[in-house]
Image 1: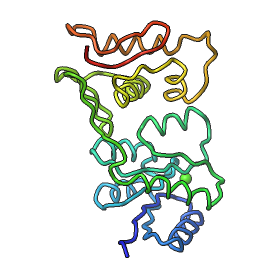
Image 2: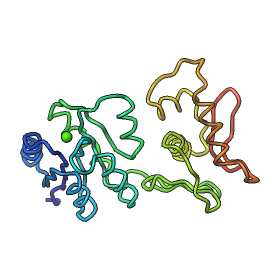
Image 3: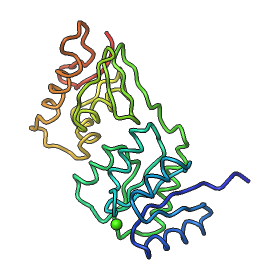
Length: 227
Ligand code: CA
């Protein structure tokens, strides 16, 4: 039989943490618990886990800081946020920072389990983490992009937009698809939020370089490619 999957649960509420440990252990996982943010951060950086269930509001060091530190260190351990914070901006922030999923409390244990299994099924190398288009490099776990060796100073949204275009390089993406993937919502057709974001991104990615990489396909959308 394969080794049991290891899960780290970072949760400051003792009852919730005990409940998660019991349920996940019964489902065949080996579970470590951290009640404080610093302990969760330390464990996530020093131990090897298949997945981390991360609360957002924690004493010491919040879940967002833990995830940021984890991704900055280059670790791609899948992270599922489990939190009472349910606003769209909070969810977008979590996913922007590199979380794999986001479940709002109160939740059904069966749903948590289903989501954990879905993430684990993707396997450790769930995606290529570094993309190269000509001299443009996008490093997803490090949340970093550079061109010609120069680091690009991007907002989280700009990075998400560039990451999407890079993951599907050479493919023309419509405004609607971009709006759905990057902003997680449908925009009315009269909004130009995507065009504005593309313009800002293009200024950072292409300005000052002889060969543009971010192209407009009139009436269709945008594509990132070397021409
Ligand atoms: Ca909490």
